[in-house]
Image 1: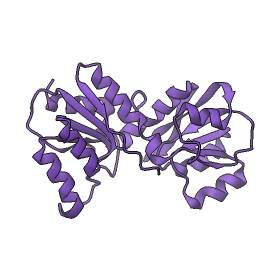
Image 2: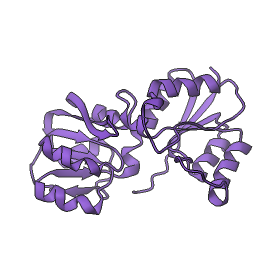
Image 3: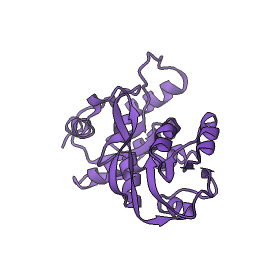
Image 4: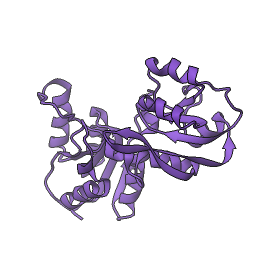
Length: 250
């Protein structure tokens, strides 16, 4: 499979044209078309991630947070360094934002739900008319610590609202990353626990006073699930893959 064929497969699999996203999803930096042998994956298109991919001789770097976000941006300063490093290294950059949160098979939220083995799943969380999150039930109630451990969160860094509402939680809603805008829906649907990446200050009292328990595992950590799922899919095609771990702690 060539780079062009692989990038087209990603776009079709993730239905990127169905989403009104601020990210310019798809190929963000092109490279000479060739047989794909090595693919790197990361959450962010940081300079260090691009360098690591180039040093590993990757043909493509697939990220959740790319370099282009729907506005005209000069290729100068740090932006130039990232773009230049990819071009000089012959590295294709493929970025996919909201479609990777939302995808029912390879998405961040689906990955979290899969890890928890949620049952009775339905869509949750609106993004411009599209449901991007997941809601469902645990087969057996679990404590916050058990849920955090299953998801690989750092218990010393998680943020929690209303941790003592229940000893164990059953019904769960999930929106990865910066998902605290879905607090109202979580309250309305009376879930035991809302899982997201980060809690914005302005929603704290809304959740607290509504009696909603919230577990925020970190924006970065909740958005590793999607790129890792794409990596597993790519490995099944016989492509050598590498995940570049760059935990921001946020």
